[in-house]
Image (cartoon, rainbow over all chains, first blue to last red):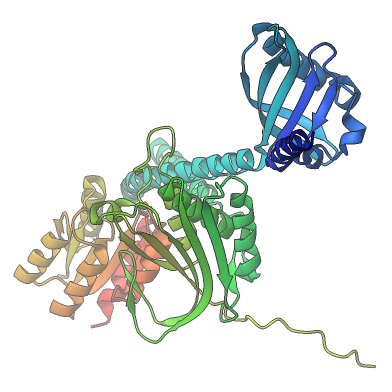
Length: 381
Length: 124
């Protein structure tokens, strides 16, 4: 009896320690008979509150209908079913789950229980949506920027010739009126192009003097949820890092893109190191594609132990739509987002990479000029 | 008669500017890129160059630097429509420190540029 109990304990421990929600329902009434720790944490209920209940006792009718329908499908077919994405309302709010449901048969081959394993993919989905959105905005920005250049040239020609013609035409003639109308429309076109450019540069965002440490931490926290545990992540922030004039959401975006890229370069195993520190340059140094002027900088360094890049890839790595990833894995906009943000913050960067060893991206952001916040003085009078 | 060199890879801008300055009494020539500009200035004496910053081949900034170096007397007006990574104004801010006397973002007004040319050619 002792050995049996030990084996039971052992198996129990395994189920309890699996970091995904595991639940078991009876096949007849689909009532919960077992829950693990991860399940309690996810749903926000203790297992005592869950055992004996079914989905209709715990969730909205709509969600319960969906779960039940899937359960019945699995038990009828007698085979595993994967639900890639399903919303669930827990005590902690709405989460998105990726669930596998498996029928457990008795020794006669009839369904006895339903086993479910659910992974919480809420954060992963949020990151994906976020990245897709910023990639879209950057793509629009690139398109607008490209069109604007040619457009401005053509407008220059139209406005120039129209103004020259106005010099030669008889005052108050029909021709003069027509030319003025053309000029008017061209001026409007000029303003429209400027507006499109402004919009596409997202200049609606406000910059303020900020500390970068919390912004980087937030980005890495967001990423952590979707990174396999075989990849270690380390962030070191040094006191030498001074505040910069920046738009926090764009810096967040930039760090997220760099870190995601690093993780993608590493596959299943590796280490990601992020460092934040201050650096004073007393002479010009080489940056990526141009020189970095002397001055006081706060540096964000992202280093990975991934596949690295050869010289040809390194040259093109910031081009929009350039990617070394397979078609469904990347649109090639991630790093062009990074360079957009760097430029928008009057910053600069360095890239070092060795195929097979890994890559290091170093972002230099100028230290904010008035970086001492004033403490309110004693009140007078 | 003052001589002006127009440098722009866009035909419509080139033709328009040549006609614009010729009408008010200058002698105009044109080039389609930075290299053409350098060769033209080496072969003829120009008083002023209107130079587009974004052209295929040589970087506009490098052309300005070369012209200042080899023909220090030249007055330079830099123009730009904005390129893919900078908008027109940022690139022009850069070039102001490197030797362009005046800068304009395309599309500019006829009066604006003619006034600028007049001012630059007054001072030796």
